[in-house]
Image (cartoon, rainbow, N blue to C red):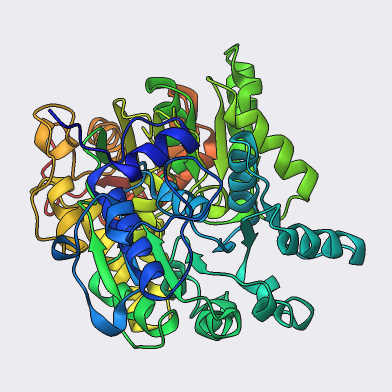
Length: 522
């Protein structure tokens, strides 16, 4: 019986040591090689020789033209949406080794650029990284490596590619494939604090590569439109959309007032390594120090395994932290989104969002850091009065709608969280909903109350009209595991929420009691 030879499978085995490609990976690579053949770009033999292959692109891809959709003018332009951990990097790394010219990969943040450079170098490739602050000699060495063919990967971000010194070199590099990783950033960041993302199409025109692929793990319909607009100039592109569900992640939401204390308790109750996302640089530092101090005072031996990470750190500090975290099985990293995009630590067991992210795309990207090895993991989203205050401060209707959707998701304890997230992404396929460990709603142990609400209400029920807010804070601090400041914050928040009310009359003026009219807490 004649054995079928799979050139693409053979290539991935020889070049990457992998035994197979997932169907979506094969489709993406097949499309690229088909488009390369149509554009007259030489393709290296998948059989391991050093000569250029004369095989047809469809034979190299292991498929036929009939089962590869031809979008005519869109040939060579793809938007690929695959969930975190599905091997998006291989979708452009493998073609880069088969195509005759270099591949340019545009990343949003330096930590991701460094991570990709490290992984490519470990695999025996020789990538070049273009970033700000490089000397003339460093840049000349980069151009030499590219002209000689020593390197087939260029790693850069939008800002450096827009600089005149770099942009003038782009047309002469013979780049055949340009990749935009984490493409949702054109919508997430481009219209706010990263205007360079709105000029991606101008970069592509300067590069002149016939193949362009935009990758992301999540994108709703509005985000897809912006990807087409800012990357492809509104001319359209093939869409390859996989199931964005991550069935090994258990989704949970926790309502709370005292968020740092809640993060502390979740870290004690859940597996490490863990990552905690905060919305600000100062917030990451405060939370990390709070956790370090509390755990040290409590005699917990892994108090020293807590560190913070954000874009304000210098390059050496970031590199040290990245290496420390990637190789530490008990670490807790408190970070802004600067560490969230695509950094490949496979064994993260717990992801906690202290602050509500700006959109469902951002939440799924960052919660998707958990369980990249396929093992059971958990993602927690904290919600509470702070989110409502942040929503009120958002100026644009679009940004308010996007964050509002996620805030509403956090408070919804009537529909499966997994199904809700997929609906928010407008995904119409079936989820990989597991029988166990799906979410707190399916488990029946979620709560619509704020975490502090029941204990606080019980205290004031037992001590009706006995304390003012300040007096209650002092007593609660003596009775429990709260500081007086934390207890006071919780009391004020519940008064604002009208779970607690101030008493009237001369005998109980400013005393606090439970609001039985609106809160029937038993």
